[in-house]
Image 1 (tube, rainbow, N blue to C red):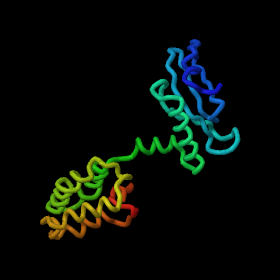
Image 2 (spheres, rainbow, N blue to C red):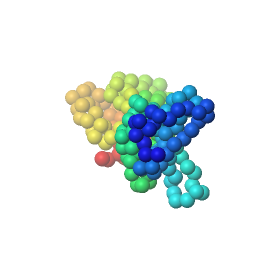
Image 3 (cartoon, rainbow, N blue to C red):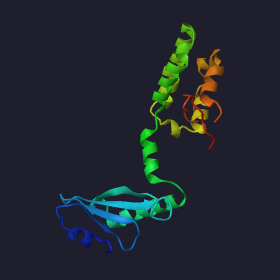
Image 4 (tube, one colour):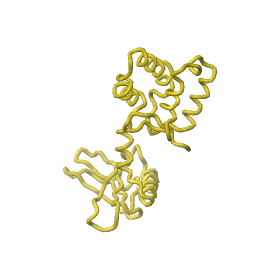
Length: 191
């Protein structure tokens, strides 16, 4: 069936989950639950042929999401798949991405905890007073080189810029390239 608001409204629940596919856009589906709840999905395979797993990604609930909006979302997802981006993997990575605060806590536990007490206190104070308020709630994968450069520029007039710890602190923030790696080092990726 070609999806329209009228067509989807007319579908009645049958007591079991039913799936209908749109004739005008391959992969667009609507699932009707026994309760009458209706949701749009996009189905795809990450390769040609039946031996590739068929995946379902939920687009939204009908009628909150209109038929036209569901088609547009499905087109965007189809384009991403064409360029090799798996939307389900992308969602999963988004959910699993850690925030800077958690990565810094791991860094303190794994690396700074091994330092002498006075040095450890200095580093923890720098992190807690400067880094966490600025970066704490950002996901590590979203920290950019320009974010770190802006942060560094903001430090130029502070006393911290003149301390003996600044070389270590800068290397902590700028490392090689920006995200916190598995080793818990904040590294900004050049844009």
